[in-house]
Amino acid sequence: MSETVVVIDFETTGLSPEQGARATEVAAVVVSNGAIVDRYQSLMNAGVRIPPFIEALTGISNRMVREAPTAGTVMAELADFIGETPLVAHNAAFDRKFLQAELQRIGRPQRATMLCSMRMARRIYPDAPNHQLATLVRHARVAETGAYHRALADAEMTAGLWLKMRQKLEETFKLPSVPLALLDKIQSAPCNGLRGCVEAYRRSCARK
Image 1: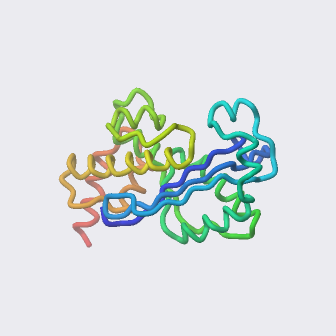
Image 2: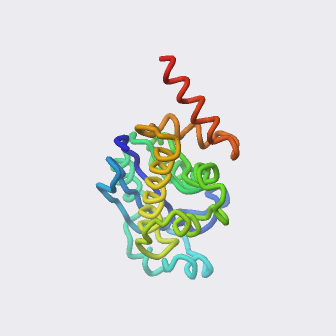
Image 3: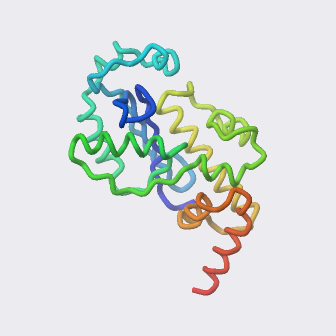
């Protein structure tokens, strides 16, 4: 578990930046050597109103974001915090869209690769009732660190899930470690193709 990743989570005003949604909160936690070693979290003021149903879901109010730093300030700090470290997110397609959109607004490129813990969980925990974060946290016995739909708690719990999945792979397949290259292959494998994916990776390593 020596490879370092940054687990990231956004809270937003809606589902898509293409439809005008903006980020309201972001958190990123650095995972290295099997533990969280650093954290970044901030609300952000993007100058847009939060719909009532989003306020009810997240607990993030319009008053809270009015008093927060600007989105540009927060995203510049986040970009510096992340650097080019590989990223992990639960339902990465969602977080990637907002990361790219918000960074584009301040003229900062998004160079880091991003892995999806939800896609990996579908292959590693096929017996889970569903693959929402809250369900997987209970299924994998990850410690709950706060309220769901707040960025820091969701990022910390995703980090815990990430570590549990790597541990399960090591134990199930007797692997000395689970490199990011293997995890990238797993998230793209068929949902019933986990064993074949690991064995193919093991064979490719043996030929090197």
